[in-house]
Length: 587
Image 1 (cartoon, rainbow, N blue to C red):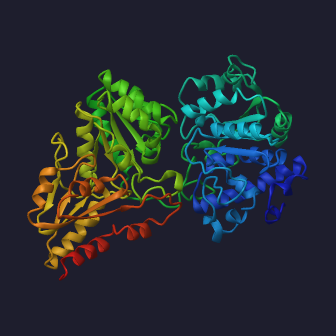
Image 2: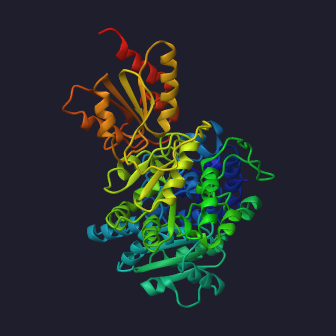
């Protein structure tokens, strides 16, 4: 048995035999499963690329040699071999490292990477910089087959092929993205797998790369031989490695989509340890869309490689048939395709994570807004209570979407309002409309909401009061509702408003507030700079109304505590109530 605590850097594995490296892989896999089963994480990608990671560090000399991982969610073993073993062997230290590469953790991590398709471009830049300054280090980009569907990966490969120097692209091909792959490129990869790398056409050779194929991508000897062969190449080369996603753990091999990222699970069965009975926004989205798709065969749902996020399980995808489109991990394509679909008379709904829609800003502006095509975006993972690592922050979408001319951005406060807004967005054909998921938790009110929102930028007055008006957008409304209810019981009577729209203001209501109010508090689960509250503050700028904007500071936070952040931003019901009380206190 190999003592993992003795491995502090890749230098500690350099003298091992292939047999010892294979034994090391067994120990690492066992340790990895132990942590993943208790902590959760990206199981399938890391189990599948385990042997290849060992082989890379055995052959190359990082951090002098540069290895860039894409998406970097397959780097758990890389971290184990580069001085961070304790974060995987000691439960007390499980949270010491992030799920992605992070230069703040180690010099072996070159970039913080959490969005896909970037590694080839980043590595291409490193290789070009090396050539310009006269360096001699090797440069390796590790990219998954799913990541190849992203436009930046195509662009990076196109440029990388022009480098007349050492540039190695390792393609980790497990015939999977998060779910199954989609796109014409994958027929080419399949041909190469089925012909032991000899089939034509060969996409990589067409671009100008030399090419090596590794049929058994979880076999240590084969991997080492392939990497040794190309390590000192003087021209761009692709090493195409055929791996098994979830390798060595039967439940992950059998259920590759479920184990791409998993919550804590029981190792013998693979079953989750905790099953929530709470409703999920993904299911609510599907339950809302399914009748609309049944009623109108031109209504289609689009995903960019994340069907689980929007509730489209394999069974539901099969049921939807041609009305479900997966464009691969390509948000730009998703938005532009939706614009073409809308122009052609279809009703496209693109379900996408808040942090991923950033990648398609140009398409939202140029292809949709300027052309006024009635595209629908369903924004998931928005706000501070969803994903909390620095690459997946869900609080920039309000500032992004609401400031593109022509877009209508709706902020539902609860399940019933979300469904009503989504139904209207799909049925109307006048505007591009985005509907924001109201936080991580589902608030069911039992209330009925309007089925039409053509009265653009019309706010909803929920409770009439005086002196202080609280305008609480989306996910912040529940806490504001609770705070205002408590204050009314105390004899303090603020006004409560649901703005409904994030992309504009109700000037009529804002003017009316001037008559009996001195203060306006805006609440939003998004970044303050460029956000909704600034629109209100700007409107009142030359008046005597004082505006207090509550939201999230413009920062990149990593693995923050959502509860603490909510307190810091004064967005809890207690904080909201205290802030209002202070404005009613004697002056």
